[in-house]
Image 1 (cartoon, rainbow, N blue to C red):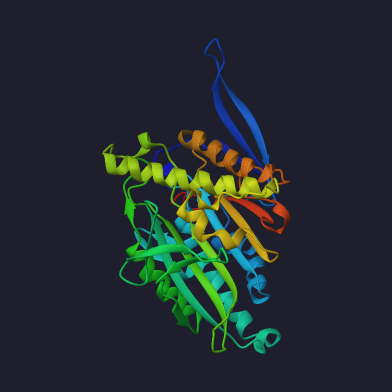
Image 2: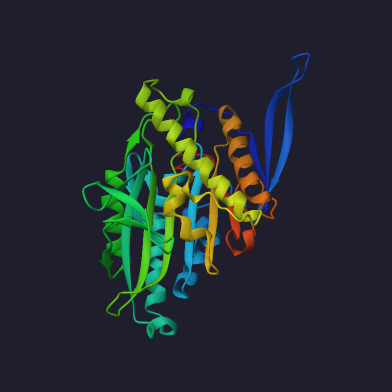
Amino acid sequence: IVEINKKEIDVVSVPGKGALLVHEPKHKVDLTKYLDNQVFHFDYSFDDTATNELVYKFTAKPLVQSIFEGGMATCFAYGQTGSGKTHTMGGDFTGKQQNSAKGIYALAAQDVFAYLHHRRYANLDLSAYVSFFEIYNGKVYDLLHKKAKLRVLEDERQQVQVVGLEEVYVTSAEEVIKMIQIGSSCRTSGQTSANANSSRSHAILQIVLRRNDRATTLHGKFSLVDLAGNEHGTDASSNDRSTLVETAKINRSLLALKECIRSLGKNSDHIPFRMSTLTKVLRDSFIGEKSRTCMIAMVSPGMTSCKYTMNTLRYADRACKKSFVTIERKTVSKCDLSKHFPAVFNHFSPNLTLKIMTK
């Protein structure tokens, strides 16, 4: 909507399902203006007509079944502030009101309960639990328990635990949606030059399957992550120290995430999970035979956002290209990261009536 209100020129086009074209404005030495057309390739690219349901179908949906087979699945949305991450993960907005039933969080929950009631998995005797927490300035807060501050510890088996995190037993997708609404209302937000109500934390909704035995053994887990928007300190509407520190923490954690993905792609002996709280809590999403992850890279099509659009695409490119894949601009790029990153997506979705994805 921001781009439409400003009557901005689009510099992004989607020529086909797996391609995205960026028309980057540049100047020659003699100051003559020209467009540098850069093509990115993905598994899927979504234009401004794509709904959250369509994006979900080709991103997170294929991962749901894996948690019923004992896997750890993760879907995270990455992109500049105001590009549509919260719209896609949490649900459509009408003004400031969010429809939590229309986001990837809720769509995944609906499929989880469809599988739970399927005869193929009935004999597993599984129950579903939900937790919802945020990482703000490197600290973890429980969004379902009065934003209680939590500790992240690693046990002797190198398993990371968020100590004290509340897991709520749920019996339907409707109950999950209520948890999403409660948690989203508590999430830390702030004002930036791109978004008057920008999410300033990483929000992680986890749907956990446990066996109904005495130990309630963990069977599978789906982590759905709405990352805070990446930006430069100069992009914040306020240049006070706390805002600059907040921005630096966000960018540092996003860099840590990229480094972990890159190290996995190189089959490195050392994966730097301890670089940030974000990568610590997502550790089990990247390792193990049954770990699967997809990335939804969000961009804004407007000319004034071109620099950030290119940064987002390059982030995805570096994260995945070195992991055996070629990434491209817009939505999905298949990253084989040897089961760790089966697909990377760059999603342009309309925010309300907006072009390609904003807010």
